[in-house]
Amino acid sequence: MVVCGDSALAHRLVSELATVYGEQVTVVLPSVRDRHGPRIAALARRGELSVTVIEAAEPDDAVLLDAGIEGAAALALTASDDQSNIHAALRARRLNPELRLVVRLFNRKLGRHLEELLERAAAVRALGLGAREIAASTVVLSDADTAAHSLVAAAVAGTSKIVQADGMMLRAAERPAGRREGRGALCTLALQPESDDEDPRLLPDDEALEQADSARPAIVLEAVSNGGRGLTGPRGGLVGTIPFGSFFSRRLRLASAGLAGLVTLLALLTWQVTGEPLGHAAYLALLDVFAIGDPALDDSAGRQLLQLLAGFAGLLMMPLLLAVVLESYGAFRAASAVRRPPRGLSGHVVLLGLGKVGTRVLDRLRELDIPVVCVERDPDARGIALARERRVPVVVGDVTEEGVLEAAKIRRSRAFLALTSNDSTNLEAVLYARETRPDLRVVLRLYDDEFSTTVYRTLRDSYPGARTRSRSVSALTAPAFAAAMMGRQVIGAIPVQRRVLLFAVVEVAGHPELEGRTVAEAFEAGAWRVLALDVASPEDRSPDLTAPLQVGEARREPELQWDLHPGYVLRPEDRVIIAATRHGLGHLLQRGGAPNPPARERETGP
Image 1 (cartoon, helix red, strand yellow):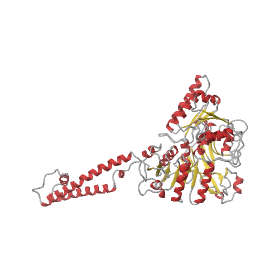
Image 2: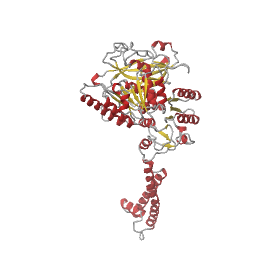
Image 3: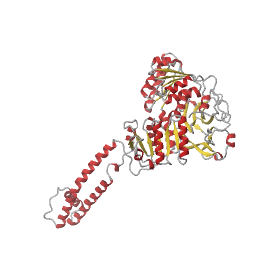
Image 4: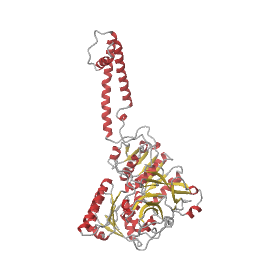
């Protein structure tokens, strides 16, 4: 395996491949002294791991050849720059047409085009060499997309335990161990620890469930919806379009309505005084208002008085029209700029940080019609354009300064997401938000596992009535990247405290732990469990069970059967969805050599 990059994702990915899957990994990075280079170099110095480090400014042809790209099984490009990842992917595909490519890209549309381009390039290259059809694949992933769903669920629903597959939304809900079964319940994923010194027990067997205290919390997998949106938020409030009222203030609208009523009254009085038809009387009144009618010198006193009142009304109309022009011009200018949080706003989500992850989280929140107020220090940040397009209020300022969170209406918010790339900034903002609102639900992004666990437990003990969640984006996404390099699709990850359960698509053929066994026999407690069976024929199977429907595409029939009979025998041609621990999935996907046994002991890391 070859990994290019020195990001947090690269460090997590190398550790995942070397420790969980037991793979031989070569890392190409600019320097072992900058960013996460020292951590990656520390993995290379561990004698029990097969990790090699190559320092190079960029992964050009010579560097890739030195890394053994011609004989490599897979290449992961994890740099934060999309352009450099694309260049390296094109080089690698030319050097090794059969290479499995996993590319990190933020631009989703560009990623789809890149996948098609590289697949065609591999086919053309193979034909040029006179080779038969090859099994090369290209997978484009976004760490921001992979983590955004979990972060949004943690902030809005109070849980990040959400998985989507084949139009089905699954939620891991906490239930007492003695009352696990309920509507839509599929299986028990974990038993929560009874004390802080213990770890949760993942994928327990029936014996462990029977011996557990009936009041002990258990994590149960439940079906939330089939084809629906799943998470929903309050509608209204901060919508994505510009309402009519934003162009004209309330006082201006009232003044315009009052003046229109006055003109109507003058028209009715003119009709009564002159005896003219109503239409002609209204016409005379308007001429008087705009001061373009003839003086009523020979008319009655009542008509002359009405003409004077109409002229006075016309004088009032001039400044009113000027105010309308100025306010509408200011509203159109404001439409191209970020909005300020409106008065009286409440029940919204405060989002700190509009980088890559924050932008994806903002996009997801607005798709769910959840009101959001963003806080960002850099006025040119990546997500500012999206916030301006969606008409989302933004407070531009340093969150560590006094009054910034107050301007975001933190006291009346429903949740706070701290998603900057700086751990100390996120922690400082969360601590200040906790002081301001002790019961506020907070989700903060932290990289270091040990530090994150300490922060989580401290906040939980200090504020027992509030929900606190700490998440690492690289920890949530590294298992998906590693599985893609192994040729498998991870459709979701559910955190259980600081550990994680993975949901992956696995072909039964070639796995003696699954092939020829019943669903009950294929269950390995603490390692993996078969959840669903793909009932579609092999030629009609969807390549991506998590892909949303495209515009104009007819809804597909469900491909997954979740209520499997324990006695069903798994056949080689079957494709199944499994829930597995990191080590359990690594054991299943082992490509050769001495396999690592499934880890039932205490797992470290996320």
